[in-house]
Length: 126
Length: 420
Image 1 (tube, one colour):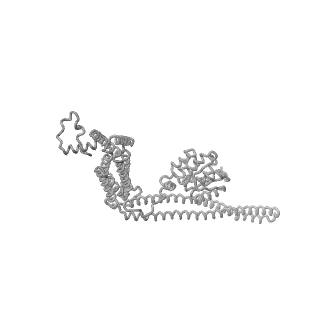
Image 2 (cartoon, rainbow over the protein chains, first blue to last red; image 1 turned 135 degrees about the vertical axis):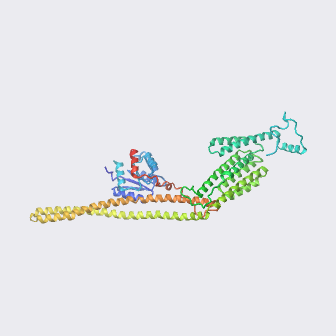
Image 3 (cartoon, one colour; image 1 turned 30 degrees about the horizontal axis):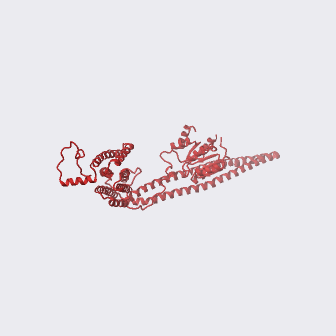
């Protein structure tokens, strides 16, 4: 079952071009409510002030990494339920295990294709 | 060390036998010595010094034995410090430090300062940095620092544990010695010369002079060895390489910027193209609706004018085959193009991957440059090129590792095993 395209998606990546790519792919998939943050700290600020149903985050970012953002979300009583998808160049076994242990909902390695992103989102929300 | 009678047979001790005949000069020397130091105190000091020497021998063995537990060495050191406080008297820690330094000097001369640079011209360092002259040199310089730092630390410890002598002269001597070794570790020869001059000024006794001379010889030996190494290194060619590195890094930086720029230009075009596709979709849907309405109109006309049914049916057939089917085919191509554009969008994420990899390469090159500058500047003054500032950027350091990367399929299998 496809995920609700009305949901509010937060895209977190320090690389503006990457945010643009993910946002564009999401728009092509029908998602219109998309927010952006350049690192984990900014993402947490948005999570405090905006409605967010789903987080897509990179791993390597200044200030606060995607892994730390994930841990912060899982540690928060009112946000721990928000699904988190990692889209990252970190494709090493130990990192995937770390992300899984921290409570990631799924994991995509860069470079990715639109179908993989769509499939993973649908799988998370099925 | 003063020349004294056999401590196992002190003069005047019962059973020691008749004393030898003494010359007036010898009696005067002994009387002079006894005025400075009572006989019992002298014997206790000799005994203390012997114990100290034994402690030092054991300590030295442990200091230089890599397998010895630190705690044991620390314990010996603590015992020495206690002894130094209680028993040394005039045979203070300076003498003991001299013994330790002498040992270390010999040790360094015989092993640590033997540099095996290859006779042939050294090649540029490869990735492991250890299979050629420069790699060996770097390793040997690092190996040299460890014993020197160790030595400086022990001199400091001695200074802390040493008894005061002549209004704190021992400390005044030992602290500069430690400062000297720290200067050697830093290879700051100007500072080392200053400290040596200071040591010469504060050294007044014969023992202290001998000690400072020993240290001076050690410094000279290390200095000469490092100069010799420096002369063996092709500094000119290393300098050239070192100066070319920033240019190479700049070029790589330009490649990253151009890649990003190109990616953004592609994204601009893709956004325009996908907007076209969306507009074309809308127009197509409108055309299909209009055609359906035409079809309905033709049906109505056929019912109103049955005599024209055959002609109207022919028009409907033409509309069906020539327009509707082609519009349907166009719609399929449009969807295909739309999916291809989406794939192109996602494919631009390669840029992030290549950018991160190039940044990692830059960090590696800058690290190499830093090491080269260190080698060159050791004996050739200040570096002539800038020291990299972002080599320790954790974001860059933890970038993609091409050798250990998993494919998305493997990641999915792993996630499945983890219960995802």
